[in-house]
Image 1 (cartoon, protein in one colour):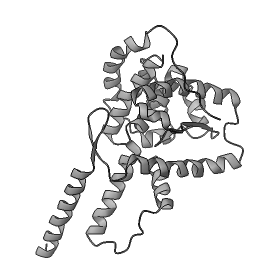
Image 2 (image 1 turned 90 degrees about the vertical axis):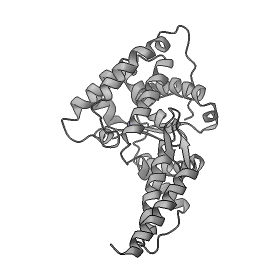
Image 3 (image 1 turned 90 degrees about the horizontal axis):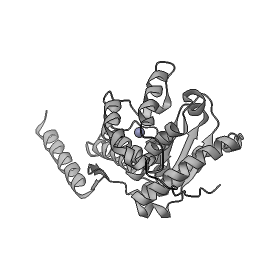
Image 4 (image 1 turned 120 degrees about the vertical axis):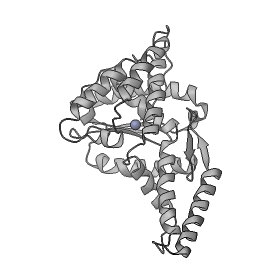
Length: 275
Ligand SMILES: [Zn+2]
């Protein structure tokens, strides 16, 4: 290795370290996050990415075409979002949206930054989740949004392309334009979450669900169903939410701690989801 290259590599490391220091945020569970893309930028990009992603389904009449299913998902999501707002009051200003995509072969659900949620009918048809289990899926997805995981994934993607850029392997790279940012936001929900992000979304999701009145023990049965189904054809949900071996153990430890929220008496607040 030439000395010039070694020096270059050293300076790249310095730049990345400096970036890390100035842009490190702390997640709700106290984990340090690399944040080169701000949450506001991720929310703006997601607004566009959400419309673009849903567009072909809307045009094909495959969006919310089952009113009973849409009502069921809105009812559960409405109770979860009310708890999400209690946990992070600034998200009251988010333009929370829920859409059901009619694609019976796709077992998937996601939430983009700013509370843009989608559930695919394949998840309902193949997993046959109870309301408690569905609340765990939605709670987990809402948790990814609350913990700014999309901005984090966009940041990691940017940092790696910057490393490539600094190494001079790519000479010209277009600046992150709005169209590019929306594309990155759409891509971010297709990238696998890290173990740390998954553990964090599980932790926050099960709490949101319990506080919304959904049985925390359903988190365990849900992932068991997911694991069983994963033996068949590939599952989109598992490609973005890798199933760590210790997940069931961690959830089994968390569930008893959440019972006090679940067993609370009285009505649970509901967030009204706009059509
Ligand atoms: Zn996840």
